[in-house]
Length: 80
Image (cartoon, rainbow, N blue to C red; front, side):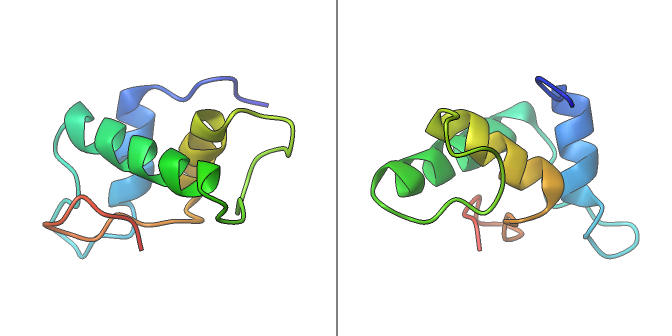
C-alpha cells in the first residue's frame, strides 16, 4: 500500500492516458488543483471512486487520480 505517491509518480499516472507526445499536466500545481477540486466534490457529497471510506477526502482524491478513477481534462485542470 502506498501512503503518498510523489508528484512525479502522480504526473506520470495522469499523463499515462495522454496521446503519444502530449502531456495532460506539466506541473505540480495542476495536480494540486485537481486533487483539491475533487476533494471538494467528495465533501459536497460525490461518491468516492477509490480509497477507503475512513480516509480524508483529499487522500481519497489523490488515490482516485493516481489509480485513474478520475481524469484531468487537457487544458482545463478539471476532472472528468
